[in-house]
Image (cartoon, rainbow, N blue to C red):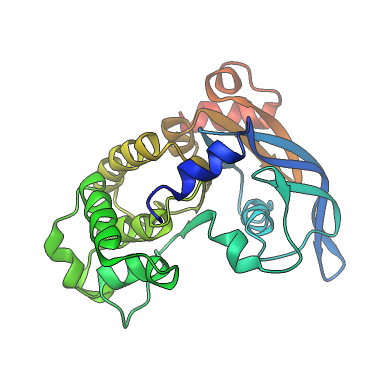
Length: 256
């Protein structure tokens, strides 16, 4: 039942876009984080959103995941507006991984990963097979399953966080600076495992990062945000080749 969730969902609801924003705006305490944002994100690809801290990247992810509500405009996720009710069912179609992994400290690695599947009523064989497949894709030793988060390195914790986000085989994966606290050598290794995971699962991914090298390394579609606006977006190679503003040009020259 659970193993083919994403595949079945996409067969029933085929799509060329995973997220569409039309004149979207969000404010907190009377201050607009962003306004009049319009953007369409492609399916089956990794889209990276790059921008300085405070430009609205994380808020955008929270809107897409239904954690906060927009104040104006229209937002479509996986071909449908975010529902007013039954948000847990909506979020089961979305994987979410953040900086620091956000693991439950009182649960083992395997319990952290398979928690949502147990809540969904998956059988023991489905859970075992899915967890084993994720461990293999992420290059993790099966013995790690019995450990607790405090017994893991930062890189191991992030791998577990990705496994947990992908447990239900969601068609959409949201990543909020998941690799920023990891040393460069471990980060490059995880990049490889992440790419293998994304390609095998055929998941549409939205990556928020302040690291342009990471964005270019992992994405096929690139978005620059600044001052609450979309400064430029398009295929990654095309954006890097022809930056639309001087600020983007300087960022490319200094970080790539």
